[in-house]
Image (cartoon, rainbow, N blue to C red; front, side, top):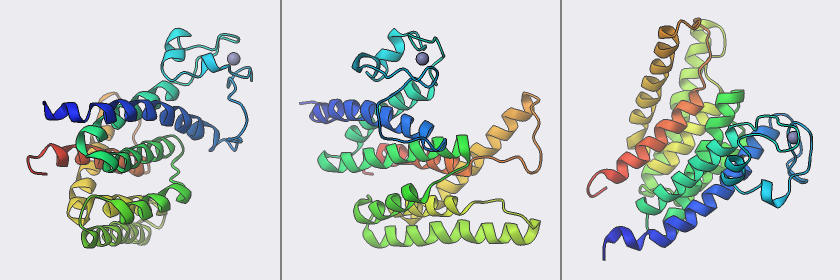
Length: 250
Ligand SMILES: [Zn+2]
């Protein structure tokens, strides 16, 4: 039997889990920074209409409704379908990359990184209530040998906390948030310290790419223009996880 077929049931399961997780996480990413309650029925952000079950099917409802609320016509935030698709896609990737229960852990790792990337991109916010559990879960069930993961957690935190201190001393203001250090610590706890230089270099390269694109498009870029470092680190970590698993014998 084709070895990829063994993964098919788990891939289907994690695709469905990913759709549901993405739907929940998009709601969380939209409501939480605005200080709105996570509990209670799902409502339209425009008219407060309580959504029926038929409005809440991930991706499908959004497609059928042509991206708008049926009642008030407000354009639904594309974050909903984007996170549903991203989490479903990552779920399938996790099932193909890791066997059995390990794929659940890997899926959860990616879904958490997607959520942090969105919160940081939109609000420059990496809440500790997410980064600390990410770190602990990485130490408990990350993929590298335990000693490498402990070293990764320590090195990840020390690198960015040290850079933040240096930047404050050099420029007299904060340039790197404490959330970034905890996030890199969590990434180190999952992947092991060996991968951290590549994570940081990839994130930096992506950041330079973003700034370069903005300059090409003649958008203003100032010396204190903020880039969401956490989003770049999260994206770099996810790309690297895929790359690690594509390497033969990896
Ligand atoms: Zn509405």
